[in-house]
Length: 514
Image (cartoon, rainbow, N blue to C red; front, side, top):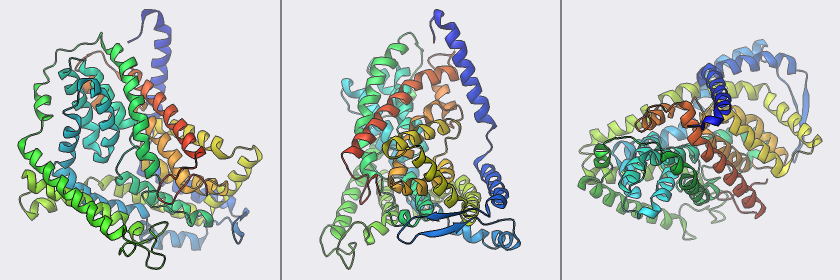
């Protein structure tokens, strides 16, 4: 793994990794983290009750800190508990979306689509295809994170290359490029819902779009930036390092599972027809000026219209339609009982999210009720202005902060629930839109996943690496992943700067600035 003359460096690096692992392992489960944060907010509110700030806007308002230890506040904390949970924006949108996603996933659509995308590629483009498929595989959730490294191993082996490099390329691309995707997925819906809740704190931010497509243009285009970067890193840095690592592993089983069956081909054919028909139907309802999904008064689509308000139901119907078409075409769906079972599995996979959401909803409600979020946003804005940290420089600093936090806490939603109520309104007062703040967060939230010792996918990566090098450990995994993390972070950040300088929209009706 290291040269003999680099023993000291290797020792220090392993010591650093050990420290990171120890710190990460001491972090509590996200639900407990929000419980602790809730009590912290209640305690701190006693000391902030006398603080008042002026919130700028069309009609400037004075906001005072509220003592959550008062009798009335404590009573409302209990009486509003259920309401806080029910009104937690990400909860409903994610549950609705995942009902449809569950059918698409459990029917086998995602797995078959990934296999189709990675096959029939000329050898010279295999690396690029694995990286491209991996970056977009986040739409398939856990299935994409698992199958892409396996496909990488099989395809590299078939091309006469070390399969270990294929594992590394597949794992790095799917986990470091998780936010970049050509399609809108459940994570986009979830983070948009959290952003909407946080933006409501500041009047000007509340009027900005916070729909699931607020970063779509930027994130979809980023796929074509990260793909060549990941390909170059694999070809120039990873493959040469893997040459000395060989494993006598029989990939027959993986190769067979990575080959499309007749049933899967039929399912994909039906799903393709269904996709075309679905998109055509939506276009008929939106493209004509008389379309039912256009604004009934202005006949516009942006910034507001029934179409923009129906994005979550449309995503639900899209995945449901494709899942049903694939299921009936491939034979994985034989009756309505299968459909109900697949829907249930899609929602069942969110049980952990529902539990965390309950406690997160209470934390956000208490945080907002205390007016601490507003006070921090205003005071933080004043401090940033005093040190002249604004504009793109502030965005770059925020990306770096998110990258660092992500090493210890990889849950996208848990981090954003904590960060959004402070940074979304704070940045809004500095002229950065909620969409711009979220775009910066998505970069930092993605690129350092692969070097986190607390990543839930790390055990899987180690298992795959040890098939070819039995001495592989966390240090091995991190050493392979670090070039991707650094390369993606640099390329993606530069791309955001260029995108912003050119004044391009981040998504429908959104830009970096307010």
